[in-house]
Length: 273
Ligand SMILES: O=C(O)c1cc(=O)[nH]c(=O)n1[C@@H]1O[C@H](COP(=O)(O)O)[C@@H](O)[C@H]1O
Image 1 (tube, protein in one colour):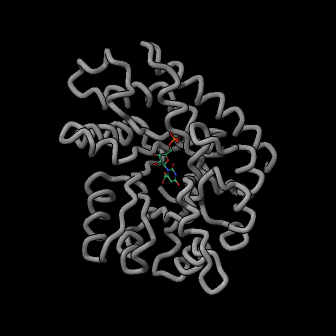
Image 2: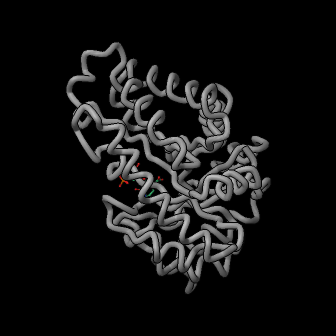
């Protein structure tokens, strides 16, 4: 999916919500554990109930890898289900990869070609040749970690290098890489006030903004400082939506939670139209 198609979906559905499928066998309703593939059964129920309120799903790959072979099968079944039932929904493999070029090429093939995700999160630490293999794929996005939502973001990302914050250097330098038009950036919702400065460097780029909900980031502040006339935001929430309830009507409750976030997003979108 292109950025323009994603923007069209956002205006059509009046939502820039990304639902994080951080599916943890210890947190899903216990009655699902008797299913052949509990992780997929949970995801399918969540997708069926919430798809009208969001424009993207983001499975975090760690949760699937931790469940071994069944986890990887669940990931494949989930992405296939999305492709078949909801081809207009944008998909993000939250894998946070990045290695020497020869290895990054294989990560890119795994997530873009084999699994068919629209995008993948990538760490910038190893630099240009570790990211460019992902950027080669047409109509696929590489979502580079810039300023993350966690406390540890202050360990390195906000340190100065020649007077400039390292996360800003990451953004500026990455813009010079080949096929940089395929880049998006991760900015944590817990750091919303930084978005004003960030928008001066990348006024038009799409940003993946995780950290509302369980991590306490404010949707209102993210929109205030980060929204562009084309929106330019995908705001992710995982646990607050998918684990809103542990009961047999968990999917319904998740849908109610997603719907309430979508309603707030609709209000924000009305401000720019
Ligand atoms: O790349 C990410 O998605 C990400 C970056 C970041 O800075 N912070 C962050 O929380 N995430 C991911 O976003 C999701 C947030 O989950 P909740 O806190 O449950 O909404 C998790 O899958 C995190 O791994």
